Length: 130
Image (tube, rainbow, N blue to C red; front, side):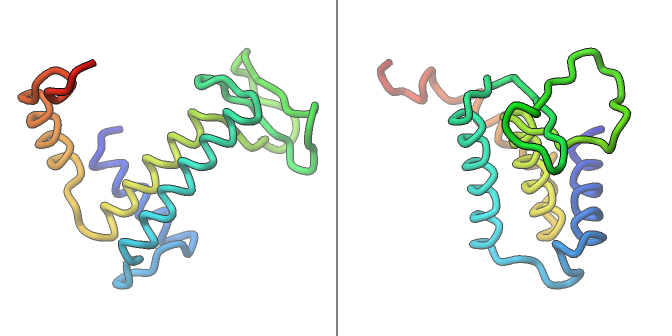
């Protein structure tokens, strides 16, 4: 999946689930608050003792020690558990950003390419001392 596909998929999902209304984009402040919320959830995972690369699965209705990590890639027999962890919240952050781009008609792939080109020209540590 490329960035343009992600923007379309995220925006369409937000429309279908009622988080976005066609022709009525959220305010910039709302988008910023939602992005910050995902960062806060990422921090909470760390506070809960999860490693930055760790994904665990939480079964609905279960808490505490019933959190499991599925490492073998096999599907579980019961209802799909909720994935939790820093990588999951990072994905949510990217999805939120993609939805924002979709709502505002931002060509995110072009802007990312432009910003990466600009960053390549910047000095080491942006000219600051280590």
